[in-house]
Amino acid sequence: MLQVSYIRENREKVLERLKFKGFKQPELVDSLIGLDEDRRLTQIELEKIVSESNLGARQIGELMRQGLKEQAEALKVKTSAVKEQTKLLADKLANLEGKLQTILLQLPNLPHQSVPFGINPDNNVTVFEHGQIPALPDNALPHWELGVKYDIIDFELGNKIAGAGFPVYKGKGAKLQRALINFFLDQAELAGYREIQPPIVVNEASGFGTGQLPDKEGQMYHIGIDNLYLIPTAEVPVTNLYRDVILKKDELPVKNCAYTPCFRREAGSYGAHVRGLNRLHQFDKVEVVQIVHPERSYQVLEEMSAYVQSLLKLLELPYRVLSLCSGDMSFTSAKTYDMEVWCAAQARWLEVSSVSNFENYQSNRLKLRYKGEGEKPRLAHTLNGSALALPRIVASLLENNQTENGIKIPAALVPYTIFDYIN
Image (cartoon, rainbow, N blue to C red; front, top):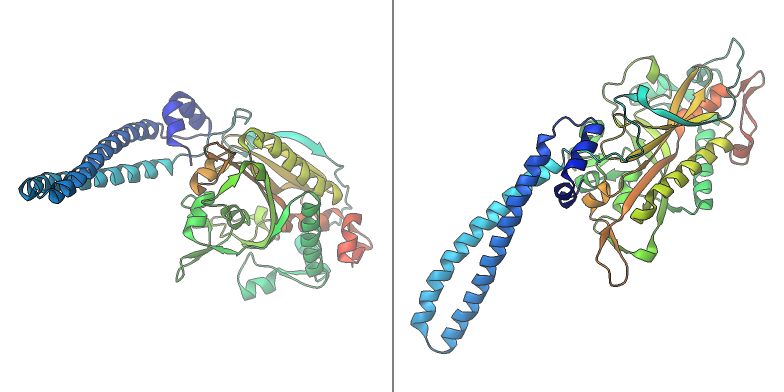
C-alpha cells in the first residue's frame, strides 16, 4: 500500500508512475490528497479539544477540592459540550480514515524507473538467455503423454478424486517431486536462507498484509465456515511472520525459505496452454523471501534472480529472464523478473519463477519496520521469488530429457532421486 505522505509530497511523480502502470483513475489521487488534508485538520482540531477537555477535568477536580462546588458544576456543563464535540470530531476522523483506506486499496504499487513500458506480455523484455534448445526426435511426446507412458502422472485419477488441475503423482513421478523439493530446500540453505514450515491456511489480515486481499480474492480458495484462505504461495504466511514487527537494523537482511503446497482457483483459465502440468489448482513450490534495508533492495533483487538462475543451470534447463513491462506486473510489485524454461515437446517457453521487489508496499500494509539505535522506525523493503515451482519444472525435465532409454535425470538431482532414468 502506498504511503499517503509520499503521495501528498510527490503528486506529479505518483500520477506519472501510475499512468505508466496503466492505472486509469488518476482523479483518485487528488481525492485522496483532499481527504488527507481534511483528515489532518480534523486531527489537529480534535487534539486541541481533547487537550482543553483534559485541562477542564483537572480544573473541576481542583475546584471540588477547594470546596467551590458551584463553580465546578458550571465548568462541568461547559466540558460536557466539549465532550459532545469531541465525539463528533472523532466520528468524522474515523469516517475520513475509512475513505482514505478505500482509495489506497485501489492504488497499485508504483513501477521502478527501470521497468520497461508496455501494456501486455508481448512488451516484456528478454534480458538474458542461457542454454541450448534441445533437439528432439519427431516422435517426441509432451509431458502429459509421457506421464501415461511411464505411469508417473495420472490426470484422470486426480480428476476423479478432486477435479481437473489436481494430478496424482505415482512411483518415480512422486519420487521426482520429493527429490525436487529436497534439492531446492538444500540449495536455499546453502544460499543462507532459513527454512520455515508455515501454516498453509491464512486469515484475512495475512492475505491483506501481502496484497492478495482484496485484489485476488476470487483466485483464492476460501474456507467459509472458518473464514480462512488456502495459501496461493508460501510468500503469504512467511512474510506475515513479521506483521506488526519492528526489526533491529542489524537483523537485516532477513532470509527465509519454505516449501508448501499452493492452491489457486485459476478462474477463467482454459485452452491448450493450460494442459497437463502447465497450470494447476494445487502444486508444490519452494519460496524464498527477504526483508531488507531499502537502500539494498534492488541489489538484492539481482542477487535473488541470479540465485534462481543457478537452480535452472544445475537442472540443465535452457531458460530466459524477462523484465516484466509495466502493464504485466502484479498489482503489488515495483519490479519483477520472470524466469522461463524451454519445454521442448511443446516448443514453448513456460514461466517457472517470478522474483519481485515490492519496496515498502507490503511492509506498509504489514506495519513491518526496522530501526537502528536512536533512530525512528522505518518501513523495510520486501522481496520474494519462486525457487522453484515444481509443475513446469517437471514438465520441462520430462520433455527435454526424453531418450530411447527413458527420461534422463540431471546429474545434480540423481543423489535425491537415487535413479538415473525414469523408464
